[in-house]
Amino acid sequence: MHLFQKHFCAIAMSMWAVSAACAAPLVEPTLHIKPEAGGNGRVALTLDACGGRTDTRILSALVENKIPATIFVTGIWLKRNAAAVEIMRAHPDLFELENHGGRHVPAVDTPQKIYGIRAAGSPAAVLAEVESGAAALAGTGGPAPKWFRGATAEYSPSAIAMIRKLGFKIAGFSINGDGGSLLGAKETARRIAAAKDGDVIIAHINQPTHAAGEGVVQGLLALKDKGLTFVRLDEADGVGNNGTTD
Ligand SMILES: [Zn+2]
Image (cartoon, rainbow, N blue to C red; front, top):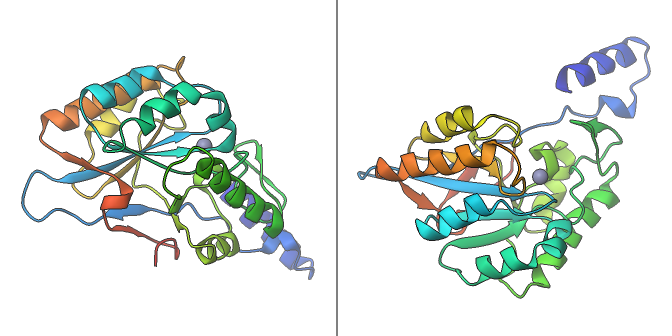
């Protein structure tokens, strides 16, 4: 995606027409939490619920092992997964629900596709995605969301500035745990188990039929065995790049 855009942009520039496609390239911001002084280290687990269903293998493991997590939910997912939402709301000590948008469209304000998903395509559509996600969450009776993560976790820089103005911090990550839920169980477990003090892990909790979910559970249990502490984004100082948190 990045390469294509840069290439296209170069062609457009050489033809003396600076088109809208030459807007700044998309960014995939990182996020870290402040490392722990002493101790075995802290990591933040973030799980996206883009659409679809609930991976109860993961949800049950989190509850049974008392592993806190920040769950990024869309309006679409909230509508279809009332039972899972109820479990999460029943464990406010474990689950923080944050904003993954209303309809799971990338927070990119120019028309294009990212991993095959059509971007919001305009500033107004980005605004609608962020605000409808927050409104859907408010409808479940929990605290107002403070963090936003767009579909595909890629953004146009101008969209980042806009979302920050709305009052949200933007949640990047430092470890891609499950490769969009498409990795096998073994590789997913290996990636997550490799997390170190200060890392922010991203994985998915909405693909119950994928092998990756099994790997998410294995990786988390390995981290727990090593004595790492799990924190949520609302209790850690998250530091991101590309103007996502400052
Ligand atoms: Zn998503």
